[in-house]
Image (cartoon, rainbow, N blue to C red; front, side, top):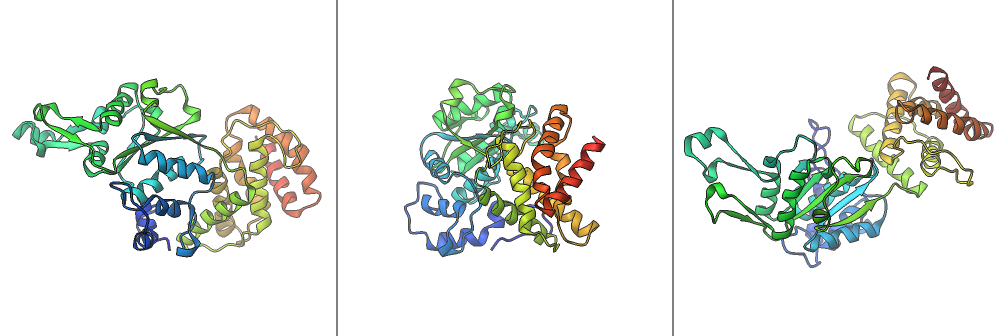
Length: 367
């Protein structure tokens, strides 16, 4: 169902899932909000899955959050997705834009280097010198293009943009118009039906460039939280790793107990307690599902290219170092305590955990 271009590591969502979007459009009998390519029900099915139409689930987490996000995008407000790193905020914004507008490519990547040109408009200076300020010399920003076409524009990592750039969005979200005074008093771009803004912000970046109260009022905020259901996390990891390996035409044996070990470790450290309610010290490192997927993928590559193709606990243990044990000495102590008190006990009953313990202990000795 998912399509890929062999020359692209990661095509856009509308390209990857073009068959699913076409199937949903062909069967869509629901009422479409103005400017939307699909009905709200079809967009929900695209993101959360529909077994009757062979549409697979793409976002794992709070289904009600997706429904609230759709309602926000149908209203006059923008949608702000906030959360810890690796909780699929950007992926969700991309999926929403692809299903609602048919394109997820109108994006502003937030950083300290973002200028007003990225949010309003700029100029082709060769044409500007030759012709003066004319419509032909105007270079629209993704925000202006989204307004003109009636599409969703994504502003990633909004709180990394300087305050003066953030403030441009206040009038855009309030008035739904962008003036171009260089082209005359009446030169303005009015938002077409379907226009909306999806912003994302990392909770760990609070204080970088805090959003003003005026801008916050223009958004509906939704917090995307890490997965708490181990079964869902296992399903997502298997799906994502299988997709990556399939793209590279790599085949490995990845036993269920190895995936379970990875998810159990992440869930334990993320929650600060085991499933048996044994308290633990939580590391400051990001223990997101995205990081778990990266570890599983790296372990599979190690097994495929440096081993016999069988992924084991030792592969997970060796790859864990780059995620948890970085430059924080306190995290090293917390992981050591987890290994000494929890992993060691599990290793007595399971070979997979014993192999994991051996690899992690070697990692500790080197640190």
